[in-house]
Amino acid sequence: MFFSFQPLKTGTFSQKLIKNLLPLLFLISFVAVLLGNTFTPVTAQIPRQEIRGVWITNNDLNILRDRKKVQDAVTKLRQLNFNTIYPVVWNSGYVMYPSVIAKNLDIQPFVFRGTDGHDILADVINQAHRQNLLAVPWFEFGFMAPPTSELALNKPEWFTQKRNSVQTSVSAAGEVMWLNPFHPEVQQFITNLLVELANNYDIDGIQFDDHMSLPHEFGYDKYTVALYRQETKKNPPADSQDPEWVSWRANKITDFMVRLNERVKQVKPKAIFSVSPNYYDFAYKLQLQDWLNWVRLNIVDELIVQVYRENLDHFNAKISRPEMQEVQQIIPTGVGIMAGLRTKPVSMQQIKSQVRAAQQRGLGVVFFYYESLWNNSSESLSERLKGFQSLFPYPALRLAAD
Image (cartoon, rainbow, N blue to C red; front, side, top):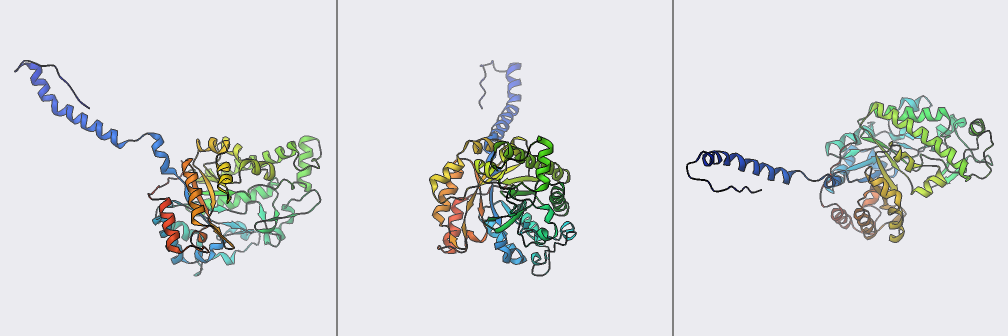
């Protein structure tokens, strides 16, 4: 910033005044320049909310149960400039923490204690916060539970069925049953678990994935059929993909998620309400999960869409869909990327190409799952570490949602 003055006669009052004001004017100029260099446009602040996360699954239980291993894992993630961890808290009909709600249903999570009997969830959260990572517990199984679980055995009336009365389906987790998301007792059970979690732990949020849904074949149980008849004066269509029947069930799940969000926020107003679904067409038509409507209803604070594709063109097609572009203008948005499975490793080259594609579109990334970042890989540990260092060369700290 520059100032110009008209020539003045020596000794005039004006000249003396200006000489006296010059130090102040230069100070103002200096401060203006300093402020201009300090404050950046709002768009430049977006990377500070960039999601760089990893799911910590039951496959990582040997780490979760050991305090020293948890500390080492969190330190490694911090050094690689990750900023969020998603530790599993609900899997196979069991919670990963001491729960009065679960105990009242005779669900005893003995196996999910730490090696010295400690609360593994509290330990993970504390260690994450010490190193400035967000800890967002992952409600992995949603409405899903194995038929051999104590939940299924103790509360059979809580589960729904297909039109042919079959109560199970086959998922990546094996044979499972589905809690009836329309049943008020099921809704209260889920709500109580999450309120208990929010009250008892310093969580930064809670994440629901593609299992906070219902496969379209289900919903033909007595309770749901009676409710549908009461509200529509019709029987449920034989075609489980009938648009009206799909919409009715999807809207019921949406209504529950709205109430669930409200209840969780009453306990923890700044908690991140995170959702990690499949891409929208699949999620809505086949799983009755209308997550785009959830975003538009302002109940989602963060979206991570699972895109587990080997082919880069197929991957790019899914992350470039219009609904992805719509959502990322509203909330932090990312992509779930497969880092490997015990039986199927993923190369660093594939991981890099997918992360770069996401970053080019302004999307964050979350990896499935922790140990597969560097274990069960054809590449050496040093090669994997070097690869992740190249993906995130600078820190990107996150703040919890307001």
